[in-house]
Amino acid sequence: MTKQTSDNAAADSEAAKAYWRANIRLLLGLLVVWFAVSFGAGILFADVLNDFTFIGFPLGFWFAQQGSIYVFVILIFVYTRKMKAIERRYGVDERDEGDDTGDVT
Image (tube, helix red, strand yellow):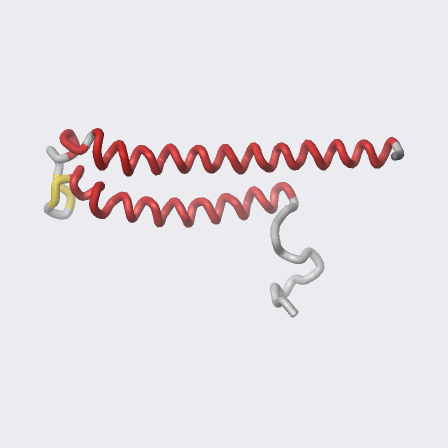
């Protein structure tokens, strides 16, 4: 193995580690939001939130029944958008670099 090949392998290894760090950081952040909304707003703080109303319903009840679902859907879109950015940054996106049309043939 030459020095250049060894350097390339080390750079690829560091890039892979950085990619996975960014991926895990994103997942942990989204899991914290998911936990705060589903468990925090829907269960732990429901009594406090029920002092407020949203669309005619107590806020804690609304989060437990509807709000958490909306937040989960938003988290899916945030995840896909952020992961596309991370994949582009680290060069692991699924697009074929030579094909600008996006067609698979």
